[in-house]
Amino acid sequence: MTPRIMLLYAKHRLFSSIPVLPGDNQGCAVVESEVYNKPLLYQFKQVKMETSLFQQESSSAMKTVCLLVVVFFASAFSCFAQDNLPADQPATQQTSERDAAALASRNTYIIGPSDIIIVTVFKEPNLSGSLLVRPDGMISMPLLGDIQASGKMPLYLADEITAKLKKYMQDPNVTVVLSQINSKKVYLIGEVAKTGPVEMTPNMTLLQAIATAGGLGPYANSKKIYILRDQDGKQKKISVQYKQALKGDASLNLILTPGDTIIVP
Image (cartoon, rainbow, N blue to C red):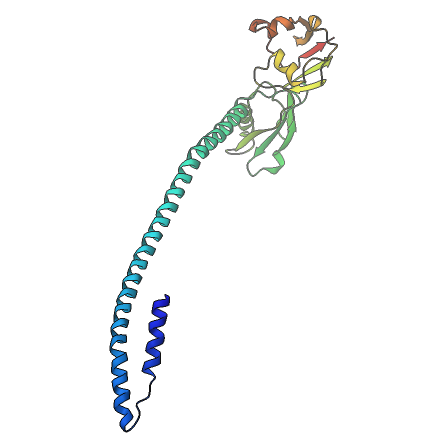
């Protein structure tokens, strides 16, 4: 409330509280009340109009401010959603692609010795379980005996087991899943940062295997590196031209096979 309104309000309360006296003083009181109250009433009407206009202007201003606040937050939320949408989509797409690639590699993987597979026969727990592929590539199952697993994909092995079980049951449902991959490894010996087995990736090369092992040691003789590989039951020595392979000669960056041993003198 402004000082002007407070002053007018005080005057109104003062003169409206003057009592009406009996006798001769009544006229004076009436005259005095009329003298002071008429201008005061006019002033209060004017103040009331000004106050009403001020309230209307304040209400309009508040509505405008509220509208601007709503528009601001709506715009900010829209920008935030648009900024996040493109970032989420590629991440989801990349995750899906990785899952699809992993599934494809599992279905096309060739089982090898020392791999562990899980054979599940639906509603037949006695025929199901985790099996280790022996060094000769065979697995053993109840009723069926020894089955060749090495060199086959899990889907093909499941079909073969299904065909064999049809002699003992009707419509067997068999699945074969890789549990652990142990056969796809190469070995590094000598002057490398980390000796021992290295899990292979598809089409792993000589340089990739050495890099996975942490690279050559400070005293490595790169000119005398060679690979030992089993072929037809015999061990073959393959010479390596390491420096030429580093220079970009793809023909010298040999593709490894499971079981290769890289010797770094």
